[in-house]
Length: 334
Image (cartoon, rainbow, N blue to C red; front, side):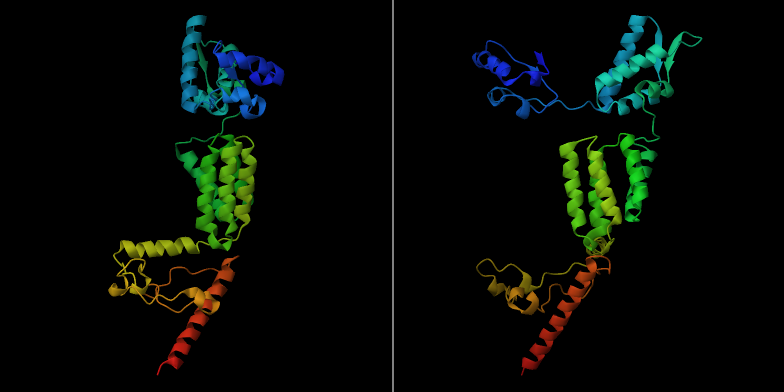
């Protein structure tokens, strides 16, 4: 077993190669660096790369409980750790078991037994031992839901300062950055929409960056995405239009597909009346006056915000072209 194998230079790594190839040794190397950059390619190609992930909070809690029992036996004294104190260590160690155990050891060494001879470790002791204050935030309870709600509503309300504050609270408390990024993607479509079509692309890019970079640097990407979305023009017109259309479907207002829009790609479609479709690109402005659904219901009503103002103008131009085509057909009819 070679720990920190990336510290071996190229020549030293090459020495290992024939022994690995012949099976004379079973090499196990550990490194905190990317092996594809720091380990020679021939050695990598003859190895199985196993990526170790950080421990989950539940795993850290299990580890801390085992350590408590072991220490109580070795020190021959009763040791109790408050549940909140354990959760604080598990959250603040960021998946690093060594950091959690070191902090627990410091807490044990600095906490005197009480009158009953029991070493009782509370949250204040763990905050001091790991040098991080607890944030009032529980990932599964009201604080979690309230904080993400405040964050989303601050972005929707175009307040970048409040949005950054709630983002910071979640990050310091150990919230999963991917959860935050997913919520920003939803917000980009729901609350910004076509007022700034690039907002969705930026949010998706932020999600990918968070996955690729990881914490703590991923916080920078989240900060950029948060401030951009908070300062972007807002519109929920696309979202509300879809909700209105889905409500019609759910309430039974289903419409048959007009025959000229039905598939005509198979033999015999014409005999079923699947004909008469007009190709929009053959007409002025690439728009043609034909029925696309047998109702005049309006679902999408673009606002005057951001890019949607241009969409609104374009729809008006299309309507004028359709009116012009209707007039021309009327004039041409006998």
